[in-house]
Amino acid sequence: MEINQHTSDYLIALLKSMVQSEQPPEKPETVDWKELINLAVYHQVDEMVYEAVKKLQQGPNEELQQSWEKLHTNNQMVNLMQQAEAKMIIKQATEGELYILPLKGALMKALYPNPLLRQMGDLDYLVDEKKINDFIPLMKNLGYEAYDVGLEDSHDVYKKRPYVEVEIHRRLLPPTEENHWHTDNIWERLIPDEENPYLLHMTLEDLYLFHLLHFEKHYSMGGSGIRSILDQHYLMKAYREQLDWDSIGEILPKMNYVEFEKMCQGLAECWFGEGEMTEELRGPAEYIINSGVFGNFEQYQQWSFERYKNEQGIKTKKGYFFRRMFMERERMEYIYPSIKKHGWLLPFCWIHRLFKSVFCNWGRVKMELKDFKKKD
Image (cartoon, rainbow, N blue to C red):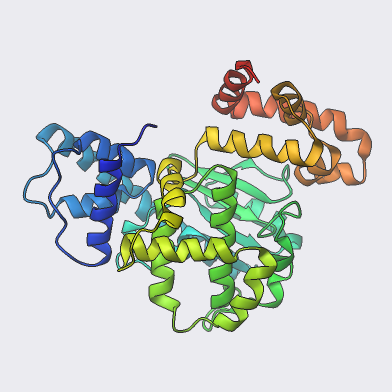
């Protein structure tokens, strides 16, 4: 997606007006309404931008306005369904004496002045790995389809069409992630809810660090968008005075996140506070704006290729593509835990993964094949 800087600057200005509860600036002539809407959707901040545009004296033409109204109505429907489903899942889990920890977007929404303005793609929960199979009948009884259950070591996926997707996580970070050591013992630090002992909460410090871990994971693997910086702003607004910064200051160097956290804080202040854009922040700002909410495929491909080149000495796209199709046993064990005890299953798991990619993720496979055809 080619992004006009005038459009991205105006998008940030509209978001800042909402954050600061100020009258938004009128659209400059250099900005096209359709490009603005597309960019807002690309970053999944279109609800907040929509509310800002409603306050303008001169909005989009009638055709675009009607289109945006439909998008808004759909967004609100998704939002309301997600919130209703979240309450139902937590209710059913805790009544069944199953511990459950809400994650990611569900936690961030509560920090926004209006939770409906913070959009999210799916519902995420951490559960006791030993009890994860107990969620299969629970989710099916709630009308969910078991979309990808028991096949991956990190999480199970359930869907209730047309709008709701749920990920039930066994762990916060996989063992292949550099900083998994911090989340491996997260259960020792979780806090039971005062009214519902089976509903769990992170400490504020873990909430903040997990935000950084999740943000950096997407950032390094292909990018993460403006919404992550909005989350950073609202985390600071809600908890800056309550966080144990001495404890956080001890952990950040161990994670190698000192500079990353500095960038997050700097951009949050620059875009949504009183900070100023510096040369140090311009590169990350441009990268984030071009990334969209979950990063883009080209950036992910570059990251993935560099990782294989550094870790395994693979220097050509042919070698990279072959290794992507037939991953080494260590990574396959993470996706298919049964290989740990039954190594002979490895070739069959390669075949299963290949067929799953073709039938379930054909769009992504086509993009990889298209990139493969390009010259090294």
